[in-house]
Structures are given as structure tokens and as C-alpha cells.
Length: 292
Image (tube, rainbow, N blue to C red; front, side, top):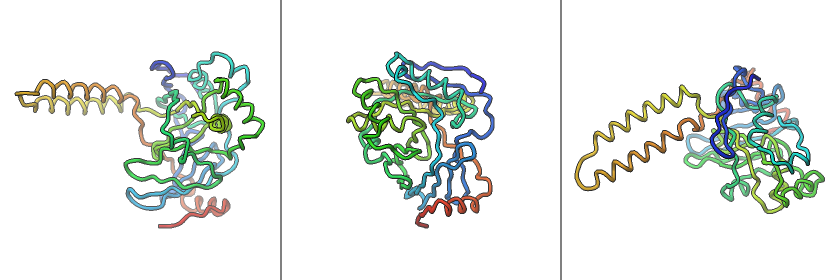
């Protein structure tokens, strides 16, 4: 992939401008058009899902398949104990890797260390291979979904990572933010996540998220500016007018500042073969899911 421009947004945050990947990315969601979805890495299906329900009351039943491969190279102990700028290091690795969700556009890598307790608690999907996510309106799911079977806390690699967790030298878990889930899947660091949790810690993470292209957020900014000017013209005089104007200006400035980094909808690519292909894969995986 051709290396693109990088936007530095402060400590722990950068945006990669990806170019040279115009087609479907190697790691992508596909849809059969009837509620069936598939997550594919290159030509290998790694997750099957079906949504059940309508409107705001929907559940996603899923079944993960063996074979997912991390796009990052193995971490060495020397890397963990060195002063590494992880967003830049992960960004460089992702630019060079296969098997990632990167396609042409802007992608943010943001270091995150604080999460609501439920994200790595009850909404962390520990069961394998199945699972059920509640995709209700207004709140979404907001959890973390592993793409491979989790190792036990006493596994050899996990025990080595637990030592790093106690020393404060554990590399962040790489998460991909998926808009339609209102949650994340783990791209790299399954064992590091288990190690941190086994030590009573919240895993430090790098969140990979697609953010709007410039033409899209500038169009939204123009629409927002027109609405803001209309509201300012409609302000009545009298007591409190200046306070209301100040509040409008503050809200407008904050909203404009977030536009270049908002989360666009997850793109779904058509599943070759459509529903029959999905049904055949589900039958081979013995994927059981209730119907509407």
C-alpha cells in the first residue's frame, strides 16, 4: 500500500490517509441481503451472523470460525520494554499488512485506557464460537468481540504477558471500531487482553476507526453552518440573549471540531452467491439461530 499523509492529533492519536487500496479490503463485512452477514479475511470466512428482530429490538446471533490471523507481527519482549510510540508503530504495521480492514480513506488510531466497566465485563464475549449481541436502538451493544478462541489465564503466553501487565509494559490491544455493532472486534492482542483482565486491569487499547473523507465532513460543515446562522438570526433580544448566543457559539464550535473524526456507517460488501452461499456456510458450521 502506498504510504499516505498522517495527521497528528496529539499524544496517542493520529489519522492515516490510506491510498492504493480502492477495492474491497481483505478484512470486510459482507451481506446476503436477508439479515445474514459474514466477516471475511481475504478468502476465509471468520464470522457468520444473522440479525433477528425489527426496528429497535434486534439481536445479532453470531458464530465465529477458526482461522482468523492477526495482521500485526509477533511482539518481542524487547519491543514491550522499549519506549515505543504504539500508534505510529501499529500504523506502520497496518500500512504494510494484509488481512486488515483498511481501504482508501482516513483511518484514526487512538490510544484509549478508560472504558465503562461493562465493556470488558459482561459485554466482553468470552464464549466460543457462538454469541448473541443486543443491538437495541439508543444504546447499541458497546462491547468487545474476540475473533479467535481466548486462551486460559494460565496459558504460557498469557502468563508471560501477565508479568508485563504487572510491570506496566504490556502493548495495547488493537481494536477495530465497527459502527453497526456500536462496539469493537479484536484485531490483535487476544492474549494481552486476557492477561490484563487476569491481573485485574482494564486493557490499554488502540482503537482503529474509519473517519469521514474531507469532502464528506466539509459538506456536513456547510449544512451545519447554515443552520447555525439561521438560529443566530432567530435570537430575540432582551435579558439572557447574550448568554444564549454564547451557548450557541460554543455548541457550534464543538460540533464543527468533531466532524472530521466522526464514525461513518460500516460498509457492507455484497456476499458472492448471496443467501444460498450464506446458508451453505451456516449449515457446514452448524450455526443455529432463531428466526423472526
